[in-house]
Length: 315
Ligand code: 8YV
Image 1 (cartoon, rainbow, N blue to C red):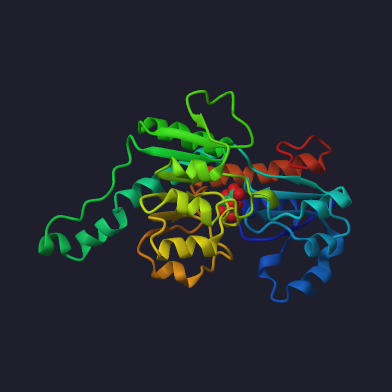
Image 2: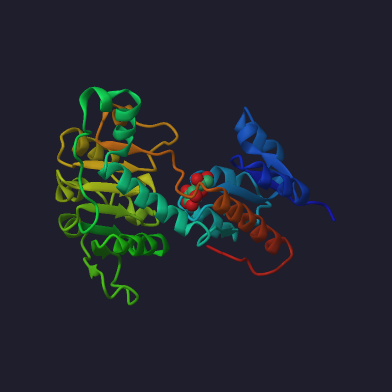
């Protein structure tokens, strides 16, 4: 049987590239200089797109592949896939939920601790000789026992909240409705009210048009000069200009961010700030989790081409 042709949108680790090459004829979109000409040349053969969470598949890409059957996303977030275009064409979509949940939650907690205890500056204090020259490192803020808000109590938000409970924190959350599985945590429907009762606000929402800029100027002001925003979801959930304004004017105390508008390029205003921790979208970036994500991408593709039910369907 002829190997199905797939369009690979972004690079994967070698351990994923090899099995993909064995099972499919792989066309590497990211390696093409002239993307449009590349798509025009191979698009008619493509039956599947393998992409990454933040890269997705846009309408132009989907329309350039008239034989497309399935889009397999390496990531839990599928906001960058044009679902309307897929629906119109009956194209199936899969993602990689569950396998990355704990690592993403871990990084969120690490970011909170790192930023609150000033670990990056403390490392610098040791390396540049300040410890010996100036003495004690400036005092930072406590984490345990303080108030935490979780915006979006889905899979990742729930794991974040469980970890926060381990720090004896006073936990509240926002979601579309209260969750039966979270009786010990306060439900606060309004994000502004959640921010007002939080020292640390975690953004763990699946991004969609409905959640765009849900963290706006008012939420940031409510979190306040002593508050910290931690984003391990998508940049679009936050009004980034309002965030930069709030950090620059100290209306908001600090932020710890794993995702950015237009990443991997960042708004240069971020680089001038000393009250923000910047991370390169790596919350799911452990060897163990990335191997599991790659396997799930392939298993979904294999199931599709074997005529079997998809393992983790989105559409
Ligand atoms: C990326 C992600 O897919 O799960 C998601 O939605 O954005 C990430 O896991 C990952 O960085 C690989 O590109």
